[in-house]
Length: 273
Image (cartoon, rainbow, N blue to C red):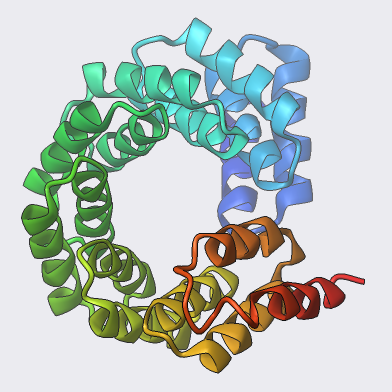
């Protein structure tokens, strides 16, 4: 009979090769004989998370973390799962536990920063992103997240600097173009914002949101027909965007829009029928 280490090693090899059914069978075989084997619990947790079984994955990873609290990878894996579940407070705690053991992990710093940002703790999130950038200074994603959290704090100059740096490193990075569009729209640089959103759309970043913001830019630039076209595209891609479209239309300044606003709302509403 194979010993547990051999079974676990074979399961890991299956996992790495993408043979998930065989890997799961191996992990469960180990746990049938040793229910508190933390490596098997951790790896089965990662596997079940990847295959859409979030609740089971959480139970497995929490059990592994309880049995081996000094393993930063287990806490990190649990943090990733909790992030996907939208449990931001618990995710921040798990990432924090990982960082307490392994402070230099930029992935855990970034994960914690994202969770703290969702919790409205912008300054703490900024500190996490800056710590991650100490290890990975040329990471476009981290720079974009830093720019996002700086924008939320009103530090517009620093935010733009971070976003421009991200785009200098990776000109085709759609998320950075999109957040830069948000910043430029905030300061009234509408033509530049429109160009940034257009690039984000061309790079395939969240097309519904990009069309929504392009519509808003065109609306503010008094280009009614272009605005309508983008709003229709946004709704065709995501009908749940209708309240946002309606909100933008309602906030439109009166003027030449006022005579056509009611008809525009009716036209857009027809798309949802």
